[in-house]
Image (tube, rainbow, N blue to C red; front, top):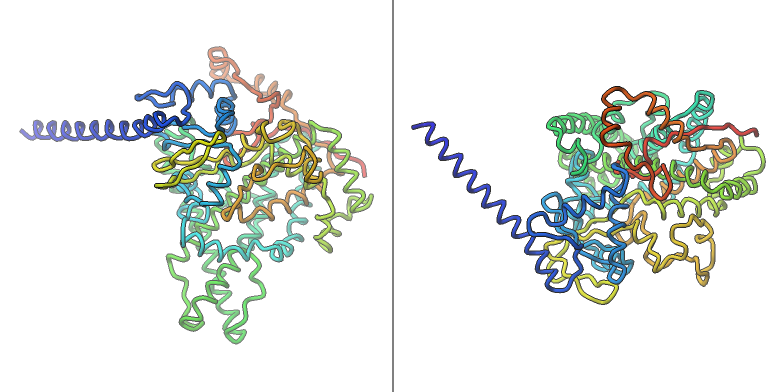
Length: 560
Protein backbone atom coordinates (compact mmCIF):
# COMPACT_ATOMS: atom_id res chain seq x y z
CA UNK A 1 0.00 0.00 0.00
CA UNK A 2 2.82 2.38 0.95
CA UNK A 3 4.63 1.67 -2.34
CA UNK A 4 1.40 2.30 -4.24
CA UNK A 5 0.89 5.66 -2.47
CA UNK A 6 4.48 6.68 -3.15
CA UNK A 7 4.16 5.84 -6.84
CA UNK A 8 0.88 7.76 -6.97
CA UNK A 9 2.51 10.79 -5.34
CA UNK A 10 5.41 10.64 -7.78
CA UNK A 11 2.98 10.39 -10.66
CA UNK A 12 1.06 13.43 -9.45
CA UNK A 13 4.29 15.42 -9.05
CA UNK A 14 5.44 14.38 -12.52
CA UNK A 15 2.07 15.40 -13.96
CA UNK A 16 2.22 18.79 -12.23
CA UNK A 17 5.82 19.31 -13.35
CA UNK A 18 5.01 18.41 -16.94
CA UNK A 19 2.04 20.75 -17.00
CA UNK A 20 4.14 23.55 -15.52
CA UNK A 21 6.80 23.00 -18.18
CA UNK A 22 4.23 23.01 -20.97
CA UNK A 23 2.67 26.22 -19.62
CA UNK A 24 6.08 27.92 -19.32
CA UNK A 25 7.04 26.88 -22.83
CA UNK A 26 3.74 28.21 -24.12
CA UNK A 27 4.06 31.48 -22.17
CA UNK A 28 7.52 32.27 -23.56
CA UNK A 29 6.94 31.03 -27.08
CA UNK A 30 3.57 32.79 -27.35
CA UNK A 31 5.28 36.09 -26.48
CA UNK A 32 7.66 35.61 -29.41
CA UNK A 33 4.81 34.53 -31.67
CA UNK A 34 2.79 37.62 -30.71
CA UNK A 35 5.73 39.93 -31.45
CA UNK A 36 6.31 38.13 -34.74
CA UNK A 37 2.67 38.67 -35.76
CA UNK A 38 3.07 42.37 -34.92
CA UNK A 39 5.83 42.56 -37.52
CA UNK A 40 8.81 42.61 -35.17
CA UNK A 41 11.90 41.02 -36.74
CA UNK A 42 12.62 37.57 -35.31
CA UNK A 43 15.73 35.53 -36.11
CA UNK A 44 14.71 33.05 -38.86
CA UNK A 45 14.33 29.39 -37.88
CA UNK A 46 12.28 29.94 -34.72
CA UNK A 47 10.06 27.06 -33.55
CA UNK A 48 7.49 26.56 -30.82
CA UNK A 49 9.49 23.65 -29.41
CA UNK A 50 13.10 24.84 -29.42
CA UNK A 51 12.81 28.57 -30.01
CA UNK A 52 16.18 29.62 -31.46
CA UNK A 53 18.32 27.06 -29.63
CA UNK A 54 19.11 25.04 -32.75
CA UNK A 55 19.65 28.19 -34.79
CA UNK A 56 22.05 29.55 -32.19
CA UNK A 57 23.98 26.27 -32.17
CA UNK A 58 24.49 26.60 -35.93
CA UNK A 59 25.91 30.09 -35.49
CA UNK A 60 28.35 28.97 -32.80
CA UNK A 61 29.86 26.35 -35.12
CA UNK A 62 31.28 29.13 -37.30
CA UNK A 63 33.69 30.26 -34.59
CA UNK A 64 36.19 28.97 -32.02
CA UNK A 65 34.44 27.07 -29.24
CA UNK A 66 35.42 29.55 -26.52
CA UNK A 67 34.87 32.81 -28.39
CA UNK A 68 33.01 35.66 -26.69
CA UNK A 69 29.25 35.70 -27.16
CA UNK A 70 29.56 39.22 -28.58
CA UNK A 71 31.01 37.84 -31.83
CA UNK A 72 28.21 35.30 -32.23
CA UNK A 73 25.60 37.97 -31.52
CA UNK A 74 27.23 40.29 -34.06
CA UNK A 75 26.92 37.58 -36.70
CA UNK A 76 23.18 37.60 -36.04
CA UNK A 77 23.10 41.40 -36.08
CA UNK A 78 24.42 41.36 -39.65
CA UNK A 79 21.13 39.76 -40.71
CA UNK A 80 19.14 42.84 -39.66
CA UNK A 81 20.72 45.96 -41.21
CA UNK A 82 17.33 47.62 -41.84
CA UNK A 83 16.12 47.42 -38.23
CA UNK A 84 19.30 46.93 -36.16
CA UNK A 85 16.94 45.31 -33.65
CA UNK A 86 15.48 41.80 -33.49
CA UNK A 87 14.10 39.07 -31.21
CA UNK A 88 16.17 36.12 -29.97
CA UNK A 89 14.52 33.28 -28.03
CA UNK A 90 16.93 31.06 -26.11
CA UNK A 91 14.49 30.13 -23.33
CA UNK A 92 14.86 28.23 -20.96
CA UNK A 93 18.50 29.32 -20.77
CA UNK A 94 17.67 33.02 -20.89
CA UNK A 95 14.61 35.20 -21.18
CA UNK A 96 13.18 36.23 -24.54
CA UNK A 97 15.51 39.04 -25.62
CA UNK A 98 15.26 42.16 -27.74
CA UNK A 99 18.71 42.46 -29.27
CA UNK A 100 19.75 45.91 -30.49
CA UNK A 101 22.89 47.43 -31.90
CA UNK A 102 21.18 50.67 -32.87
CA UNK A 103 22.85 53.64 -31.16
CA UNK A 104 19.63 55.62 -30.68
CA UNK A 105 17.80 52.60 -29.26
CA UNK A 106 20.73 51.95 -26.93
CA UNK A 107 20.60 55.56 -25.71
CA UNK A 108 16.88 55.19 -25.10
CA UNK A 109 17.40 52.02 -23.04
CA UNK A 110 20.29 53.22 -20.89
CA UNK A 111 19.74 56.99 -20.67
CA UNK A 112 16.32 58.35 -21.60
CA UNK A 113 14.35 55.71 -19.71
CA UNK A 114 17.27 54.11 -17.86
CA UNK A 115 15.45 50.78 -17.82
CA UNK A 116 16.11 48.58 -14.77
CA UNK A 117 18.80 45.94 -14.68
CA UNK A 118 17.60 42.46 -15.52
CA UNK A 119 17.46 39.85 -12.70
CA UNK A 120 19.70 37.76 -14.96
CA UNK A 121 22.52 40.21 -14.24
CA UNK A 122 22.52 39.37 -10.53
CA UNK A 123 22.39 35.64 -11.26
CA UNK A 124 25.41 36.04 -13.55
CA UNK A 125 27.65 37.85 -11.05
CA UNK A 126 26.36 36.40 -7.78
CA UNK A 127 29.06 33.68 -7.55
CA UNK A 128 31.63 36.50 -7.47
CA UNK A 129 29.81 39.40 -5.78
CA UNK A 130 27.74 37.35 -3.35
CA UNK A 131 24.68 39.60 -3.48
CA UNK A 132 23.16 42.88 -4.71
CA UNK A 133 25.61 45.58 -5.83
CA UNK A 134 25.58 48.74 -7.94
CA UNK A 135 25.83 46.66 -11.10
CA UNK A 136 22.58 44.83 -10.27
CA UNK A 137 20.61 47.20 -8.00
CA UNK A 138 17.72 49.36 -9.20
CA UNK A 139 15.79 52.39 -8.03
CA UNK A 140 16.49 54.02 -4.68
CA UNK A 141 18.90 51.26 -3.60
CA UNK A 142 21.10 51.94 -6.60
CA UNK A 143 20.95 55.73 -6.13
CA UNK A 144 21.90 55.48 -2.45
CA UNK A 145 24.88 53.20 -3.03
CA UNK A 146 26.09 55.00 -6.15
CA UNK A 147 26.20 58.30 -4.25
CA UNK A 148 27.97 56.60 -1.34
CA UNK A 149 30.60 55.01 -3.60
CA UNK A 150 31.21 57.90 -6.03
CA UNK A 151 33.79 59.74 -3.86
CA UNK A 152 36.14 56.75 -3.98
CA UNK A 153 36.34 57.07 -7.77
CA UNK A 154 36.49 60.87 -8.00
CA UNK A 155 39.26 62.54 -9.99
CA UNK A 156 40.91 63.85 -6.82
CA UNK A 157 40.86 60.42 -5.21
CA UNK A 158 42.34 58.74 -8.28
CA UNK A 159 45.26 61.19 -8.39
CA UNK A 160 46.23 59.95 -4.93
CA UNK A 161 46.59 56.42 -6.31
CA UNK A 162 49.01 57.34 -9.10
CA UNK A 163 52.10 56.64 -7.01
CA UNK A 164 50.94 53.13 -6.09
CA UNK A 165 50.00 52.32 -9.69
CA UNK A 166 53.47 53.42 -10.83
CA UNK A 167 55.10 51.20 -8.19
CA UNK A 168 52.93 48.25 -9.25
CA UNK A 169 53.84 48.75 -12.91
CA UNK A 170 57.53 48.81 -11.93
CA UNK A 171 57.04 45.36 -10.39
CA UNK A 172 55.29 44.28 -13.60
CA UNK A 173 58.26 45.51 -15.67
CA UNK A 174 60.77 43.66 -13.50
CA UNK A 175 58.72 40.49 -13.90
CA UNK A 176 58.71 40.85 -17.70
CA UNK A 177 62.47 41.41 -17.71
CA UNK A 178 62.99 38.23 -15.69
CA UNK A 179 60.71 36.21 -17.97
CA UNK A 180 62.22 37.57 -21.20
CA UNK A 181 65.11 35.11 -20.99
CA UNK A 182 62.88 32.10 -20.31
CA UNK A 183 60.96 31.76 -23.57
CA UNK A 184 57.21 32.00 -24.06
CA UNK A 185 55.10 33.52 -21.28
CA UNK A 186 51.33 33.91 -20.86
CA UNK A 187 51.04 37.68 -20.66
CA UNK A 188 47.44 37.59 -19.45
CA UNK A 189 48.51 35.99 -16.15
CA UNK A 190 50.96 38.82 -15.49
CA UNK A 191 48.43 41.51 -16.40
CA UNK A 192 45.80 39.96 -14.11
CA UNK A 193 48.19 40.03 -11.15
CA UNK A 194 49.15 43.63 -11.86
CA UNK A 195 45.58 44.91 -12.06
CA UNK A 196 44.55 42.89 -9.01
CA UNK A 197 47.28 44.54 -6.95
CA UNK A 198 46.00 47.94 -8.07
CA UNK A 199 42.29 47.34 -7.51
CA UNK A 200 42.91 45.86 -4.04
CA UNK A 201 44.77 49.04 -3.09
CA UNK A 202 42.18 51.39 -4.56
CA UNK A 203 39.16 49.62 -3.11
CA UNK A 204 40.47 48.25 0.20
CA UNK A 205 43.81 50.02 0.78
CA UNK A 206 45.37 46.55 0.85
CA UNK A 207 48.95 45.87 -0.28
CA UNK A 208 48.74 42.20 -1.22
CA UNK A 209 51.76 41.96 -3.58
CA UNK A 210 49.98 39.42 -5.77
CA UNK A 211 52.59 39.89 -8.48
CA UNK A 212 55.23 38.34 -6.24
CA UNK A 213 53.22 35.89 -4.10
CA UNK A 214 49.83 34.20 -4.05
CA UNK A 215 46.93 35.59 -2.05
CA UNK A 216 43.94 33.58 -0.73
CA UNK A 217 41.32 36.07 -1.94
CA UNK A 218 42.78 36.15 -5.45
CA UNK A 219 42.89 32.36 -5.55
CA UNK A 220 39.27 32.09 -4.40
CA UNK A 221 38.23 34.64 -7.01
CA UNK A 222 40.07 32.78 -9.78
CA UNK A 223 38.63 29.44 -8.67
CA UNK A 224 35.10 30.80 -8.73
CA UNK A 225 35.16 32.47 -12.11
CA UNK A 226 32.00 33.89 -13.61
CA UNK A 227 28.64 32.19 -13.92
CA UNK A 228 29.35 29.96 -16.92
CA UNK A 229 27.43 30.07 -20.14
CA UNK A 230 24.92 27.29 -20.75
CA UNK A 231 27.23 26.15 -23.54
CA UNK A 232 30.19 25.60 -21.19
CA UNK A 233 30.63 22.10 -19.76
CA UNK A 234 31.36 23.38 -16.23
CA UNK A 235 27.85 24.88 -16.10
CA UNK A 236 26.56 21.35 -15.56
CA UNK A 237 29.23 20.13 -13.15
CA UNK A 238 27.28 18.94 -10.06
CA UNK A 239 30.14 20.07 -7.80
CA UNK A 240 30.15 23.63 -9.17
CA UNK A 241 27.61 25.07 -6.67
CA UNK A 242 29.58 23.60 -3.76
CA UNK A 243 32.86 25.02 -5.06
CA UNK A 244 31.27 28.42 -5.65
CA UNK A 245 29.75 28.47 -2.16
CA UNK A 246 33.09 27.61 -0.56
CA UNK A 247 35.03 30.22 -2.51
CA UNK A 248 32.28 32.77 -1.91
CA UNK A 249 32.49 32.09 1.82
CA UNK A 250 36.25 32.66 1.79
CA UNK A 251 35.90 35.91 -0.14
CA UNK A 252 33.08 37.21 2.05
CA UNK A 253 34.98 36.31 5.21
CA UNK A 254 38.13 38.10 4.04
CA UNK A 255 36.27 41.24 2.97
CA UNK A 256 34.01 41.54 6.03
CA UNK A 257 36.97 41.16 8.38
CA UNK A 258 38.82 43.90 6.53
CA UNK A 259 35.78 46.21 6.54
CA UNK A 260 35.19 45.68 10.28
CA UNK A 261 38.83 46.49 10.99
CA UNK A 262 38.67 49.69 8.94
CA UNK A 263 35.40 50.65 10.62
CA UNK A 264 36.96 50.41 14.09
CA UNK A 265 40.00 52.40 12.93
CA UNK A 266 37.82 55.20 11.57
CA UNK A 267 35.66 55.29 14.68
CA UNK A 268 38.72 55.59 16.93
CA UNK A 269 40.27 58.28 14.72
CA UNK A 270 37.04 60.30 14.81
CA UNK A 271 36.68 60.00 18.55
CA UNK A 272 40.24 61.25 18.98
CA UNK A 273 39.69 64.15 16.56
CA UNK A 274 36.80 65.79 18.45
CA UNK A 275 34.04 63.69 16.92
CA UNK A 276 33.75 65.70 13.70
CA UNK A 277 36.66 65.46 11.32
CA UNK A 278 36.73 62.92 8.56
CA UNK A 279 39.72 60.62 8.67
CA UNK A 280 42.78 61.70 6.76
CA UNK A 281 43.51 58.13 5.67
CA UNK A 282 40.14 57.41 4.06
CA UNK A 283 41.41 57.34 0.48
CA UNK A 284 40.24 53.85 -0.47
CA UNK A 285 36.72 53.22 -1.76
CA UNK A 286 35.85 51.26 1.39
CA UNK A 287 37.36 53.95 3.63
CA UNK A 288 35.41 56.75 1.96
CA UNK A 289 32.21 54.71 2.03
CA UNK A 290 32.58 54.11 5.76
CA UNK A 291 33.34 57.80 6.29
CA UNK A 292 30.06 58.70 4.56
CA UNK A 293 28.30 56.11 6.71
CA UNK A 294 29.72 57.73 9.84
CA UNK A 295 28.56 61.17 8.65
CA UNK A 296 25.05 59.85 8.13
CA UNK A 297 24.72 57.77 11.29
CA UNK A 298 26.52 60.09 13.75
CA UNK A 299 24.16 62.93 12.83
CA UNK A 300 21.30 60.71 14.00
CA UNK A 301 22.71 59.03 17.10
CA UNK A 302 26.05 60.56 17.97
CA UNK A 303 29.46 59.16 17.09
CA UNK A 304 29.81 56.87 20.11
CA UNK A 305 26.53 55.17 19.24
CA UNK A 306 27.49 54.36 15.64
CA UNK A 307 27.76 50.62 15.01
CA UNK A 308 28.38 48.70 11.82
CA UNK A 309 24.97 47.29 10.94
CA UNK A 310 25.19 43.68 9.68
CA UNK A 311 23.05 44.45 6.63
CA UNK A 312 25.21 47.43 5.70
CA UNK A 313 28.38 45.39 6.23
CA UNK A 314 27.16 42.64 3.92
CA UNK A 315 26.28 45.06 1.12
CA UNK A 316 29.65 46.83 1.47
CA UNK A 317 31.23 43.40 1.06
CA UNK A 318 29.11 42.67 -2.04
CA UNK A 319 30.10 46.02 -3.56
CA UNK A 320 33.75 45.39 -2.76
CA UNK A 321 33.75 41.94 -4.31
CA UNK A 322 32.09 43.31 -7.45
CA UNK A 323 34.72 46.05 -7.77
CA UNK A 324 37.52 43.54 -7.33
CA UNK A 325 36.12 41.50 -10.21
CA UNK A 326 35.28 44.36 -12.56
CA UNK A 327 38.41 46.37 -11.84
CA UNK A 328 40.63 43.37 -12.44
CA UNK A 329 39.28 41.36 -15.36
CA UNK A 330 38.22 44.09 -17.77
CA UNK A 331 41.39 46.15 -17.25
CA UNK A 332 43.85 43.27 -17.51
CA UNK A 333 42.26 41.81 -20.64
CA UNK A 334 42.29 45.20 -22.36
CA UNK A 335 45.95 45.80 -21.47
CA UNK A 336 46.89 42.54 -23.19
CA UNK A 337 44.75 43.33 -26.22
CA UNK A 338 46.42 46.74 -26.51
CA UNK A 339 49.77 44.98 -26.81
CA UNK A 340 48.26 42.69 -29.44
CA UNK A 341 46.92 45.56 -31.54
CA UNK A 342 50.29 47.31 -31.27
CA UNK A 343 52.05 44.12 -32.44
CA UNK A 344 49.70 43.96 -35.44
CA UNK A 345 50.24 47.65 -36.25
CA UNK A 346 53.98 48.51 -36.05
CA UNK A 347 53.38 52.12 -37.10
CA UNK A 348 51.31 52.58 -33.94
CA UNK A 349 54.22 51.42 -31.78
CA UNK A 350 56.50 53.98 -33.43
CA UNK A 351 54.06 56.84 -32.81
CA UNK A 352 53.55 55.82 -29.19
CA UNK A 353 57.28 55.77 -28.52
CA UNK A 354 57.72 59.14 -30.17
CA UNK A 355 54.96 60.66 -28.04
CA UNK A 356 56.41 59.22 -24.84
CA UNK A 357 59.87 60.56 -25.64
CA UNK A 358 58.41 63.99 -26.38
CA UNK A 359 56.49 64.12 -23.09
CA UNK A 360 58.94 62.37 -20.74
CA UNK A 361 62.30 62.77 -22.44
CA UNK A 362 64.76 60.10 -23.62
CA UNK A 363 65.52 58.56 -20.20
CA UNK A 364 62.95 55.80 -19.69
CA UNK A 365 64.01 55.25 -16.08
CA UNK A 366 62.61 58.65 -15.03
CA UNK A 367 59.04 58.11 -16.26
CA UNK A 368 57.73 56.74 -12.98
CA UNK A 369 59.24 59.57 -10.95
CA UNK A 370 57.78 62.16 -13.33
CA UNK A 371 54.30 60.62 -13.14
CA UNK A 372 54.39 60.54 -9.34
CA UNK A 373 55.40 64.19 -9.22
CA UNK A 374 52.96 65.30 -11.90
CA UNK A 375 50.10 62.85 -12.69
CA UNK A 376 48.64 65.41 -15.11
CA UNK A 377 51.36 64.38 -17.59
CA UNK A 378 49.01 61.55 -18.52
CA UNK A 379 46.81 64.12 -20.23
CA UNK A 380 49.68 65.12 -22.53
CA UNK A 381 49.74 61.60 -24.01
CA UNK A 382 46.78 62.07 -26.34
CA UNK A 383 47.83 59.44 -28.86
CA UNK A 384 48.25 56.88 -26.06
CA UNK A 385 44.67 57.50 -24.94
CA UNK A 386 43.52 57.25 -28.56
CA UNK A 387 45.17 53.81 -28.88
CA UNK A 388 43.40 52.66 -25.72
CA UNK A 389 40.03 53.97 -26.90
CA UNK A 390 40.39 52.35 -30.30
CA UNK A 391 41.30 49.03 -28.69
CA UNK A 392 38.19 49.29 -26.50
CA UNK A 393 36.12 50.02 -29.60
CA UNK A 394 37.25 46.87 -31.39
CA UNK A 395 37.53 44.74 -28.24
CA UNK A 396 34.94 45.85 -25.66
CA UNK A 397 35.50 43.75 -22.52
CA UNK A 398 31.80 43.57 -21.59
CA UNK A 399 29.83 41.78 -24.34
CA UNK A 400 26.31 43.05 -23.52
CA UNK A 401 24.36 45.49 -21.38
CA UNK A 402 21.20 43.76 -20.26
CA UNK A 403 18.10 45.62 -19.06
CA UNK A 404 14.55 44.54 -18.20
CA UNK A 405 11.56 45.56 -20.29
CA UNK A 406 8.59 47.38 -18.75
CA UNK A 407 4.87 47.70 -19.55
CA UNK A 408 4.01 50.54 -21.92
CA UNK A 409 7.65 51.02 -22.90
CA UNK A 410 8.73 50.39 -26.49
CA UNK A 411 11.99 50.94 -28.34
CA UNK A 412 12.20 52.14 -31.91
CA UNK A 413 14.00 50.24 -34.65
CA UNK A 414 16.11 51.91 -37.33
CA UNK A 415 13.21 51.81 -39.80
CA UNK A 416 10.80 53.39 -37.31
CA UNK A 417 8.83 50.42 -35.98
CA UNK A 418 8.06 50.11 -32.27
CA UNK A 419 9.02 47.01 -30.26
CA UNK A 420 7.16 46.58 -26.94
CA UNK A 421 9.56 45.57 -24.18
CA UNK A 422 7.18 44.10 -21.58
CA UNK A 423 8.16 40.55 -20.66
CA UNK A 424 11.49 40.75 -22.50
CA UNK A 425 15.09 41.43 -21.66
CA UNK A 426 16.77 44.13 -23.74
CA UNK A 427 20.37 43.38 -24.73
CA UNK A 428 22.35 46.33 -26.03
CA UNK A 429 25.28 45.05 -28.11
CA UNK A 430 28.36 47.31 -27.74
CA UNK A 431 30.61 45.22 -30.00
CA UNK A 432 28.16 45.17 -32.91
CA UNK A 433 27.34 48.85 -32.36
CA UNK A 434 31.01 49.88 -32.32
CA UNK A 435 31.74 48.23 -35.68
CA UNK A 436 28.42 49.09 -37.33
CA UNK A 437 29.37 49.99 -40.95
CA UNK A 438 26.33 52.26 -41.29
CA UNK A 439 27.74 54.81 -38.84
CA UNK A 440 31.47 54.05 -38.53
CA UNK A 441 33.92 54.78 -41.35
CA UNK A 442 36.33 51.87 -41.96
CA UNK A 443 34.80 50.16 -38.91
CA UNK A 444 37.11 47.15 -38.61
CA UNK A 445 40.35 49.05 -39.11
CA UNK A 446 42.48 50.00 -36.10
CA UNK A 447 42.66 53.79 -36.47
CA UNK A 448 43.61 55.65 -33.26
CA UNK A 449 43.48 58.93 -35.18
CA UNK A 450 39.68 58.76 -35.22
CA UNK A 451 39.90 59.93 -31.57
CA UNK A 452 42.09 62.92 -32.45
CA UNK A 453 40.30 64.45 -35.46
CA UNK A 454 37.83 67.35 -35.36
CA UNK A 455 34.08 66.76 -35.32
CA UNK A 456 33.72 67.57 -39.03
CA UNK A 457 36.13 64.79 -40.07
CA UNK A 458 34.67 61.59 -41.54
CA UNK A 459 36.51 59.45 -38.97
CA UNK A 460 35.06 61.32 -36.00
CA UNK A 461 33.19 58.85 -33.75
CA UNK A 462 29.40 58.92 -34.22
CA UNK A 463 27.33 60.06 -31.21
CA UNK A 464 26.12 57.48 -28.68
CA UNK A 465 27.78 54.58 -30.53
CA UNK A 466 30.86 54.15 -28.33
CA UNK A 467 29.97 52.20 -25.19
CA UNK A 468 32.81 50.08 -23.75
CA UNK A 469 31.88 51.55 -20.36
CA UNK A 470 28.28 52.05 -21.51
CA UNK A 471 26.61 55.46 -21.28
CA UNK A 472 24.04 57.21 -19.14
CA UNK A 473 23.66 57.44 -15.36
CA UNK A 474 24.76 53.82 -14.91
CA UNK A 475 28.00 54.14 -16.85
CA UNK A 476 30.94 52.33 -15.24
CA UNK A 477 31.91 54.06 -11.99
CA UNK A 478 35.55 53.03 -12.40
CA UNK A 479 36.17 54.00 -16.03
CA UNK A 480 38.58 56.84 -15.22
CA UNK A 481 40.62 54.56 -12.96
CA UNK A 482 40.82 52.02 -15.78
CA UNK A 483 41.95 54.61 -18.33
CA UNK A 484 44.55 56.03 -15.94
CA UNK A 485 45.92 52.59 -15.14
CA UNK A 486 46.14 51.53 -18.78
CA UNK A 487 47.88 54.76 -19.77
CA UNK A 488 50.48 54.34 -17.03
CA UNK A 489 51.13 50.73 -18.08
CA UNK A 490 51.58 51.58 -21.77
CA UNK A 491 53.71 54.66 -21.08
CA UNK A 492 56.05 52.76 -18.74
CA UNK A 493 56.47 49.69 -20.97
CA UNK A 494 56.46 50.82 -24.62
CA UNK A 495 60.11 51.91 -24.69
CA UNK A 496 61.29 49.05 -22.48
CA UNK A 497 59.77 46.05 -24.24
CA UNK A 498 58.76 44.66 -27.59
CA UNK A 499 55.94 42.17 -27.05
CA UNK A 500 55.16 39.73 -29.87
CA UNK A 501 52.47 37.02 -29.91
CA UNK A 502 53.84 33.47 -30.05
CA UNK A 503 50.73 31.44 -30.85
CA UNK A 504 52.42 29.36 -33.55
CA UNK A 505 55.07 28.15 -31.10
CA UNK A 506 52.45 27.69 -28.38
CA UNK A 507 50.20 25.59 -30.63
CA UNK A 508 53.13 23.47 -31.81
CA UNK A 509 54.17 22.77 -28.21
CA UNK A 510 50.58 21.89 -27.35
CA UNK A 511 50.43 19.40 -30.22
CA UNK A 512 53.71 17.78 -29.16
CA UNK A 513 52.52 17.45 -25.56
CA UNK A 514 49.17 15.88 -26.40
CA UNK A 515 48.50 12.67 -24.50
CA UNK A 516 46.76 9.61 -25.99
CA UNK A 517 43.29 10.90 -25.09
CA UNK A 518 44.03 14.31 -26.56
CA UNK A 519 45.31 12.76 -29.78
CA UNK A 520 42.20 10.60 -30.03
CA UNK A 521 39.96 13.61 -29.48
CA UNK A 522 41.84 15.60 -32.11
CA UNK A 523 41.59 12.69 -34.54
CA UNK A 524 37.82 12.51 -34.11
CA UNK A 525 36.88 16.18 -33.86
CA UNK A 526 39.88 17.88 -35.46
CA UNK A 527 41.61 20.90 -33.97
CA UNK A 528 38.63 23.15 -34.49
CA UNK A 529 38.61 26.79 -35.52
CA UNK A 530 41.45 28.70 -33.86
CA UNK A 531 41.17 32.22 -35.28
CA UNK A 532 38.64 34.98 -35.77
CA UNK A 533 39.14 37.55 -38.53
CA UNK A 534 42.65 36.17 -38.97
CA UNK A 535 43.57 36.85 -35.35
CA UNK A 536 44.55 34.05 -32.96
CA UNK A 537 44.16 36.40 -29.97
CA UNK A 538 40.36 36.51 -30.15
CA UNK A 539 38.29 37.44 -27.10
CA UNK A 540 36.86 34.52 -25.13
CA UNK A 541 33.82 33.84 -22.95
CA UNK A 542 35.88 34.31 -19.79
CA UNK A 543 34.74 37.28 -17.68
CA UNK A 544 36.37 40.39 -19.10
CA UNK A 545 36.68 38.74 -22.53
CA UNK A 546 40.32 37.76 -22.04
CA UNK A 547 42.35 36.80 -25.14
CA UNK A 548 42.53 33.13 -26.04
CA UNK A 549 44.95 30.82 -24.23
CA UNK A 550 46.28 33.59 -22.00
CA UNK A 551 48.11 35.33 -24.87
CA UNK A 552 51.37 33.39 -25.27
CA UNK A 553 54.11 35.80 -26.31
CA UNK A 554 57.81 36.52 -26.33
CA UNK A 555 59.28 39.53 -24.57
CA UNK A 556 62.20 41.45 -26.04
CA UNK A 557 63.92 43.88 -23.66
CA UNK A 558 64.81 47.02 -25.59
CA UNK A 559 68.08 48.85 -25.11
CA UNK A 560 67.69 52.22 -23.40
